[in-house]
Image 1 (cartoon, one colour):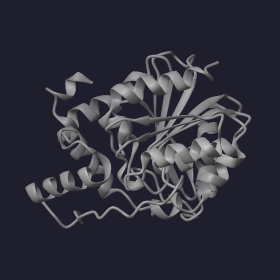
Image 2 (cartoon, helix red, strand yellow):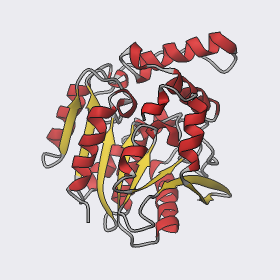
Image 3 (tube, rainbow, N blue to C red):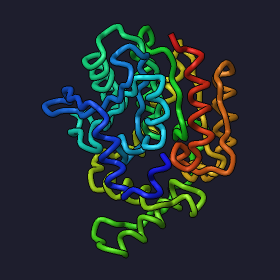
Image 4 (tube, rainbow, N blue to C red):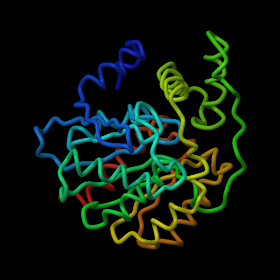
Length: 288
């Protein structure tokens, strides 16, 4: 990822995307878009990464290049977000997760095992897919997910869709600092380009789904290993990252739950030097 320093952010994203194979699967009457990074020629185990609300595969820009050395990395734009079409039932987490799970089966083959990792809203999707496909899904890892522990106060974000130029850029920076990245020094041009692209294409109302209780329903149904990480300064937790870690440890004592020091919500971007090796360690326990 060092080429972020010298390469234009959009060029960097285009280059990473060009290294993947694009797939399309049904999403109601529309389609769901996926990207698969694979250096192994189809022999490595599969890990599926689910992005956060108002997001896309780009939330994992600092994780994909690390995981692809040992995994086939499959990353969707979740229904109603990014390039994927809106789902038939945009209020039901398990209905959306069924579309997602069916998409995974269509791409890698029904019966092929995989691990799922979800950031924020993606943690709800990961947990629901794990509950739906417990015989096929090997493990669930959630990062910065809402719906676990006490609810935080909603983060106030500034509206950006009507803004242009420097004002739009500066407002994205403000919102990223309030919601996603605790350390302002970590808010670089790449993070703002990703935020802008994601915001333009966000249609699904993910906060309500994240707070619906679906994630806890799914976690209680899991019969496979559960892992988790929260940033110490996770803004949607207000910031109560340590409380969410404690709550999930109490609910699932056999799970592996970590606190990421001095880190906000978008931990995989802000603290990749912690998240990536920790994630590889967690995934190694269920690697076939």
